[in-house]
Image 1: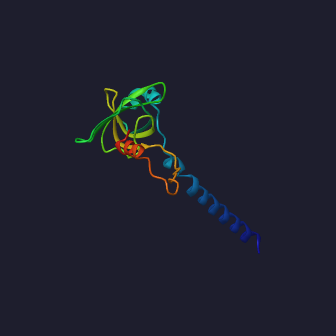
Image 2: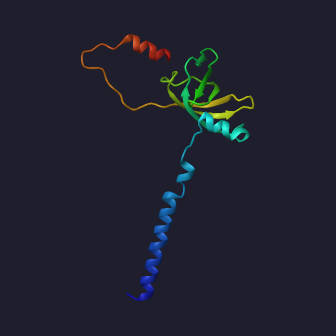
Length: 148
């Protein structure tokens, strides 16, 4: 093999490698999803208003208000420092309740209320089936169905 052929093959391998690396890692930043905590959102002030963002935190105790007829959902999300009022018109996920971690997509209004377009709950993926022959705890089942 001549020196020119070796150089050509080396250049082609480098181009292919660089292309593969760019395809693999170049779009990662666009696909990462970040969210702000209520404190971080407050620190961004006017930039946060009207922008489509994700807000992450914990649903505060005694803040949940869901009108099932109109599907109006109101609750507060906090991070231990700051609390933000959230409003939305959607049926909450089945696991949604006070004290659970949530990520809410939407916009911040000028009055400081976050308007939700989408609500995601954080949960672990551990499912424990009841033991063979045991009866389910109907009180716990009713509470989970009621969202309490």
